[in-house]
Length: 375
Image (cartoon, rainbow, N blue to C red; front, side):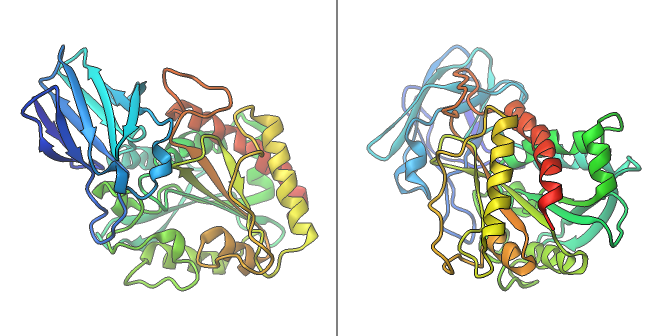
C-alpha cells in the first residue's frame, strides 16, 4: 500500500501506513499560515483490503464544527465522487473503506485541480463571446484570469462574479462549470439578454496558487484573501489588489463571491448588512435576490446562514462588505456546503460537483431577475 498527495492540489501527511487496519494521517497546514482542513490523497495497492484511516489532527483543524455529520469523498476516476461513512471521535476523523480497485482517491470535497481549470479556461478563450483580460500574475507567477461578457457601454450595468478566494472551497469551481457555459449559450434567452443589458466580469479562480499548493484558505504568502479587501498589496495579496483596481475602473452594480462553508449543511447567501451605507433599499435588493433564488432552486434556503452584522459593524476587509460599501451596490457571498445538504439530500454523493453546476446555472436566472432593481 502506498499513500501520496497529488502534486496538484493534494494535501496529506502519512504518519504510519504499515498496517492497513490502522493508517495514521495528518493534514498539512497552509504553508505560511496555521489553517488546515483540506485533504486530498491517493491510495494505491489497497484493492480488496478493509482499510481503516484516522486523520489525527482533525481536532485542531480550522473549523472543528465542520466534522459533525461530515462524510469523506472518494473516487476511482476523479469524476464520480461518492461519500463514505465517517466518524469524528476524540479529535480524530475516522473512516473505513474496502476499495474495489488498486487506486482510489479520498478528499474533503471533490477536488478541482488547476490542470482541469487550465483546460476549462482554454475552452473559454476560444469563444468569441468571452473576452479575456489578463489581470497580472500571482506570487507563484500564475496568470490571474478575468473574462468579460458583453460590450461595455455607459448605459449598461457592471456585474462582477468571482470564486475560490479560499482554495479549499472547490465547490466554487464546480459552480463556475455550470454558470459560465450557460452564460455563453447562444441559444439561452436569459444569457443572451443578460449580455445585452449588462457587462459581466468573471474571475473563475482567484487563488490559483493556494489551489495548486493544496491549501485550505490562503495564498502563497499565507494571506486569507477574503480578509484583504480593505488594503490589498502587490506583495501580500496581488490577486485582490488587481481585481479591486479593475473594479474601480469599471464600477460595480452587482457582486457575487462564491464560497463553501464547513459547518452549515445548506446553501445560503450572506449579504453586506452592517456596512455604513446600508439602507432599506439595500435590504429590499438582498431579500429579492434570496427570494428569487429560493423560488428557482429547491436546493437554496434562507432559514440557515451567518448572523447578520449590526449597523456599522461589518468587517470591511471582507470582499462582499468592502464592495457593497465601496460601490453602494448589491454585494453578496454565496456559500455551499462541504457536507450533504439538509435540503434534498442525496446520501450517495452528498453535495456534489453536479449539484454545484446546477446551482451555477440557476443563479443566472436570479441575476437576470435582479437586474431591474440594481440602480
